[in-house]
Amino acid sequence: MTLIRRVSSSFPQFVGFAKRSLKSYKLPGDTSSSPSLTHGVHIFHCPDEVGIVAKLSECIASRGGNILGADVFVPEKKTVFYSRSEFVFDPVKWPREQMDEDFLQLSKMFGAIRSVVRVPDLDPKFKISVFASKQDHCLVDLLHGWQDRRLPVDITCVISNHQRDPNTHVMRFLERNNIPYHYLQTTNDDKKEEEILELVLDTDFLVLARYMQVLSGHFLRTYGKDVINIHHGLLPSFKGGNPCKQAFDAGVKLIGATSHFVTEELDSGPIIEQMVERVSHRDNLQSFVQKSENLEKQCLAKAIRSYCELRVLPYEENRTVVF
Image 1 (cartoon, helix red, strand yellow):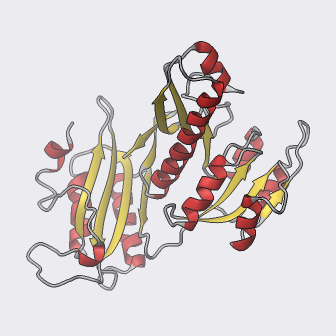
Image 2 (cartoon, one colour):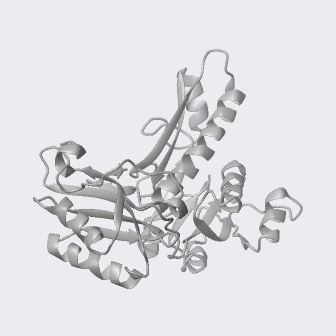
Image 3 (tube, helix red, strand yellow):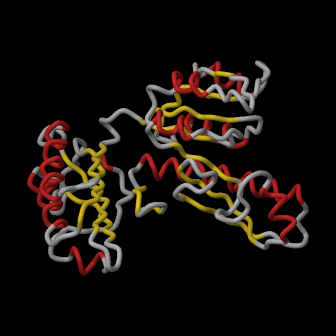
């Protein structure tokens, strides 16, 4: 079922996702600037039935909002509905609390499994903790992405099972920016999970930036929120340790990186993002690793952005819808 056929009668002002500045955004026919307009995102997951798109559109339009873009997914031969809408609105005319109430009523109307609205300019940034072991490339990229505001998160702390010298680039960066660094010496018998749980109580999700420790099922159930991992390989192939060496020995012509949610089964959680790059007989193991690390950084950062922009929804037991 295509988006156009489903929404053509319900979105009279439908346009592609706008990249224009919201400060200069104008409603159709409006010749004045609209500096008060604010950007919002809403995702909806519910049993499928006739009229969902029309009601979503009506909810936004009735409060003076204007839809910039929408994406709908209804799996073939399944009665389930997914949507993600981007819109602009005047927060004076549509207060944040009223918005929550309006979408809650829609959620009740359609028996929604998930209904989330986010207003980036008004809502707090997602709080995350970053886990890392000895390798720095993903950690450094995330720190710079946070500093440059390319990642819409606040980093509460960095947790590692590797002790870093205070004069290293990472430690100096963390100190300058008042981000705590917690070194927890782990063993096979003691992964320090109770201490870690205390450190991450106030986070919205966790990021494993090449953290070379397996989180137990007890930890995941107790934490109860999403954990995003980067795997230096193109899952489901080359699971476990040293996938670069596995891929090199297998003579592959494509290498990849996979960002996925962490589950109790190792390297088997729902996939959020994957990236690939060609390799050839001219590559050696060192160039394999260099190309792989570059993919890992890009793949993890994109997965975090997608998650924070409400682009990622669970689908079936072990899959995702990524708008």
